Structure formats: C-alpha cells, structure tokens
Length: 206
Image (tube, rainbow, N blue to C red; front, side, top):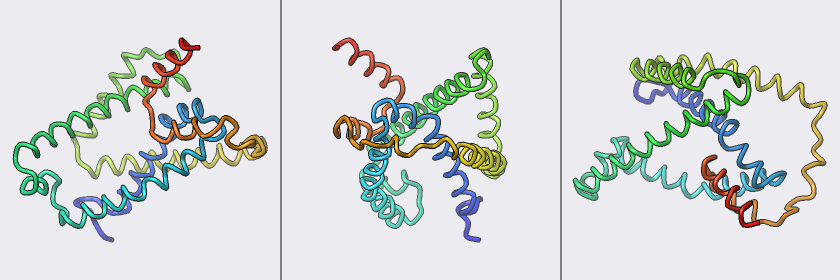
C-alpha cells in the first residue's frame, strides 16, 4: 500500500472522513440551516463546484513542490522574510482554528448530551486528551481515529435508517422561496460568533 510519511493513504482518507463528517454536523449545518433553510443543499452544491479551481491549485503546488515542505518550497521563490511571515501567520491561523474548534465541539457536546456538565471540566478533559494524542505520534492518532470513526459510521447509519420512515422530501419545495440571497450568503462559512453578531445586528435593524 502506498504510504505518506509514516501513515498510509487509507489512514489519510479515514482521517479526512472523520474531520469532514464532524465538521459538517457540528459546525456547518446549524448556521447553514439558520440562513439558507431548506435551500441549504443548493449553497453546498454551488460551493462544491466553486472549489474545483482551488483543487487544481493544490495539485499544482503538490507537483511543483515535489513533496517538500511548503516553507522550504517558498523560501527560494519569495525570500526569507516573506516566508517567515507566511509561517507565523499560518501558525497563528491554525492556533485560532484549534480554539474555535474546541469551542464549537464543547458547545455541541453541552447542548446535545451533557447539558449539566461544568464547562471548565470539559475543557480540561478535552485539552488533556488533545495534548496526550499530539505528544505521542501520528500512528496513535490514526489508530484512535479508526476506532472513533467505526462507531461514528455505525451510529450514523443507525440514525439514517431509523429516520427513513419520518422523512418527507416534499418539504424541500418550494425551491429558492426567499430568493438567492440566503443561498449566496451561505456559500462561505460563517463562524457561530459572527452568526450571533449578524443575527443581533439584523434584529436591531428591524
């Protein structure tokens, strides 16, 4: 089996499935339903088509860099100072995304099945677990992901099949009932904090 570093392509695919699945359910679906409603699937479809040029850009970078690290690839092209700026900005962005992801995940856990649990305790447990996995190695992370993803898939299919009897696809119509503005506005994901500010601003205007 072809390998990427110390893990296989299969492990990369399984990690991507977990990240995409949880990110969609926990982070993207609530604001998408708030602003696009029953037309949310249209914004997802348009966004997927719009991402095709970005995928070609990723393929171009992958082939041009010959699998070198992005920092080493940029160094002879844009210079030492811009490369350093790029590295620090990227590190800050990833740290910010980690903070947002933790906040979103804990908010989802607290609102779904642990409403009475102290938030400080949940943050402590979540942080210790993340630090422990990050301090081990990549193989440990992918193995834990395999176990987690197995139960996510099993429970996901269970929920999907048990809800078939109550699904009513006719509720998707009428299409674009409120025009294309909600569809266009949800093409780019908004963080829940921004969504709350946006909703408050809109209600104050009304």
